[in-house]
Amino acid sequence: MDGEALPPGWDLVVERLSLRVATAAELTVDLTTRPALRRIRSTVAGCLGFGRTKDEPLGALLLVVDELVGNAYDHTPRPSWLRVTRELRGLLVEVVDEDPSVERVAAGGGHGLQLVEQLSLGWGVRATEPGKTVWALVPAQLFHEH
Image (tube, rainbow, N blue to C red):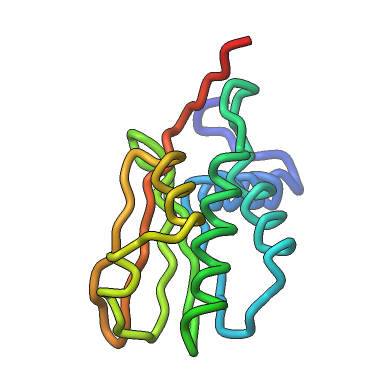
């Protein structure tokens, strides 16, 4: 079929599939309206679950997303956005807010951030304009021994 035109209607199918694949590689969610955590988890699972194998459970990713977004909702006046990006070693979760208080997050200490540390290859916080980004790199595959 090289060089041949797609049958009628297939261009829309290819466009939708391409958008779905792109969304499976990176997802950004606006947090300024404070969407419900349940809705955020559902969106992340629906978009980033596309194309995954059964050996790539989303539970750890969803727990990390829940904790980082929940912290932004509870401890900052203005959460901005969540971005989840597929990377070679895992899924990078970034939550950006407008609160410049990096030291408080860097101190960690809370049970939720301890959970994030256990489920991630690494996590941290960095100053950004006008606030900060809290990030965690969740492993691409989490295999469970039975």
